[in-house]
Image (cartoon, rainbow, N blue to C red; front, side, top):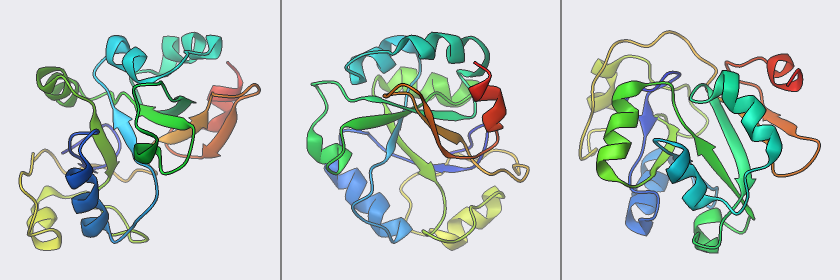
Length: 175
């Protein structure tokens, strides 16, 4: 599915079979996936607390090209976090995707559509050739080059930039 950065690969965040299938497709294992959510209510159901810094980041950058790490809530099976205590949350600035997540009423696993270590796919016509066994492909436009979402750990103070993506770290650090 298209997002505001890259084409994503996903499924029900709580589904172990979906996780195994995505691991197999990407050629990766034992690395946690982020959850794409449709709104603040869904976000709140997945996290233990919402740190105060979130509200400042939310004002200018959420939904958007960020993945934020929160302390995982008690509802989250630790197995889904691959041994970690945080959960990555992404609310893409892509209204059709947000509508789909809202309709499904469940967060989606969200990860870039690529073989681990290879460049992501930007053109929807390439998807069936690269991933012929996908159950569903939601096509969209050819996406411009992107570095993906910027990953920020807000579970600790001070926050930490874990991966620089399309949102420059200075914009987050100015918050």
